[in-house]
Length: 406
Image (cartoon, rainbow, N blue to C red):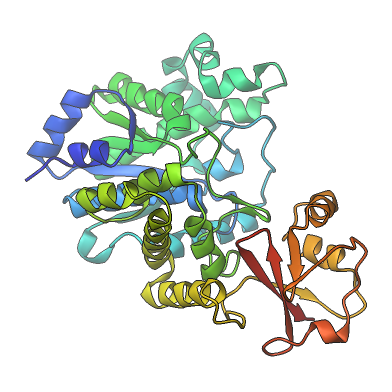
């Protein structure tokens, strides 16, 4: 039986590891309890979380036990990693709501039946800690100069780092200590931007309990040009169908760059690597078939097989020359008498009116198969002549939306 570490390396997940040889040996010897943390910064997980969920699913398929940790405690502070400014402070009610949304979504990817996985909330212990006791218990294990050397803090040092955020590393390290005590957790996984925080947890376990634990980071989901993947005109690519429809989700992966097909197939599907290599090796028009496979497989994992089939059928209906509109196409609300630019900006088709004006000048916007040339165009009753009284917008060559009367 192959070692799951080799599987993660082969598929491109592994970025850094505290002790590769030791961790591989541990995987061979026992079922390893490991955790990944999810801070409830919104009411849905997004594409950036998806790579972590896939890594967790591969680990569980290999017989190891996931601990899915939602940040009911760390969410009160907010992780400064990768940030140029302080995160918005959430209320306790918002944090609880977001945590519940996360739990429901995570359960679609991880099997919790029969104790195969654990769902935990760090608010259960972090919110009960006495500040002075915490300082005396773990404060001496952290040196300020070493913390400031961490990349997550160095990036913020010039612009200002609050004492609130400075405590985040201590809180995350304490999570690892507590999970080790409660569940025998021996591995923390996370995105590569979490490396400093993960090392802090490994070191805290060693100093407080003399326990050997491990840290492993996954590569972040980036495009071939190094930019983050999973951003749309309306913001993040959400895993919640109400925030990003299955059709829009499918279309995002159908439209990835040719150079990113192999990476996405390896990281975000369960297809065998032989098939991944074959699909990614295609050239010309054939690579588009590979992108359709990618889009279907990813949408199936996130939204289910039926939604994936509908999204695929909708895309083929739009791009296969059959005409009409797809029911699952992203929808925006509008009505006769409104300026088209206002409707599309409000509906997040455009990030700004400036973007919309530029696209119109470039002849990149179509309303019901007619080019839009007037940035001040006002919708009329005749525009809503499609299925169920809708209008169809094409942005660029590939992105389609429905305008539905509000």
